[in-house]
Image 1 (cartoon, rainbow, N blue to C red):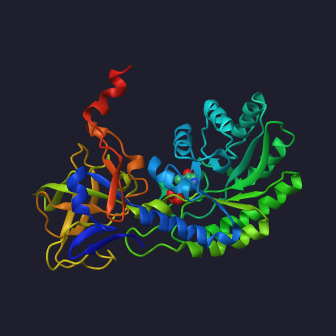
Image 2 (image 1 turned 45 degrees about the horizontal axis):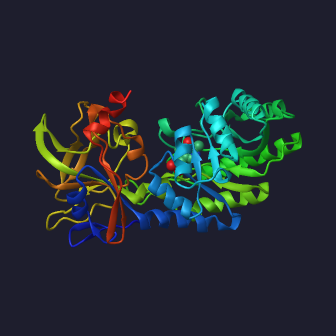
Image 3 (image 1 turned 45 degrees about the vertical axis):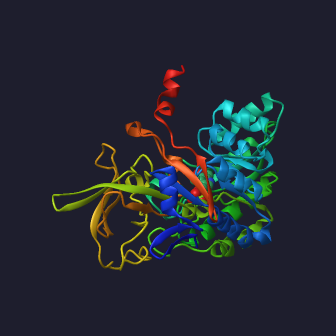
Length: 427
Ligand SMILES: *Cc1c(COP(=O)(O)O)cnc(C)c1O
């Protein structure tokens, strides 16, 4: 469900025409729908309500502080993976008692910053890290709350670059070693192991991995408690998939059905770290056609958004629906299912101005004939879009705008050329 809807062949974000936004703020432009964002957060809140969970919005997915602020206002906590993300979460109104901190390489200054701000749970990814956490905390006269992040060693479930629970990835503790690590930290004055954490990967379109992961987690929780650890938190991470190519994702309810029974059996507080599920379909990337070109039998649609704005297609081979903001008479709204033939279209590579052959938003994509100045929309760009953007080719980063019904406001200005060189000039 989202609030990007075609009315009389014009795309609206809620009650605002996308053309109006493109004209006012320029392109490329990230447009977010407040109603869609809050709808998805609300779906998770109600699906998991029986467990009274702590939902920690994953800041890395889209860390814009205005979006994070909306999350905080609705009672969300935050999942952070760096000092910078912690800073963002705090700026947005987050408080340490609702912040969890993951990542394989937390530095001592980051750990101190987190402890100073009362971060309640460190998701710990190696034995060495766990002992270092204890050392840093003890040196500050504090006790760090920790969850052991386990790699539950599940079959592959998503793209290899984003699967975080298969054997050999850098994340978490090998499942066979968790109990040895637990034994080794007993009696440490600087750290209290209060939880078990897993984040399986992303995006995950099925519920089975969560059921399998939770089952393995339950056994570990029992064993850790037997060792004397006061385990009170089960953190099942994020990873819930969304509709990209077609209606392919599971509703929040389906994930709740497999996770809630495990939480009850574990007698734990549930923590979740959703990102993509909340913000993915709440954002689009709007661009403008510059030129079209044909070579070697291929058709190129050259528009002003590029891999530096949205790197997912070239990084992961990800699929985003792409369609004109104002399709010509006779054309439908964007196809719901790209596995079916789409009339009045032909295959086009949607590319940007960046000097890389890998600079594309889509390849051989069924699109109608478009011309210079037409507006193009890349859907489901709210997650890992702006967050992974860069200044490659000295391209100023895109602007971001938040729509609320018929009103809209800039939540990040388009970078200027001065912004690009400022850290070099002001040294
Ligand atoms: C990336 C990440 C998440 C969020 O994943 P989504 O697929 O966006 O929900 C949650 N937890 C951890 C530890 C992560 O690395």
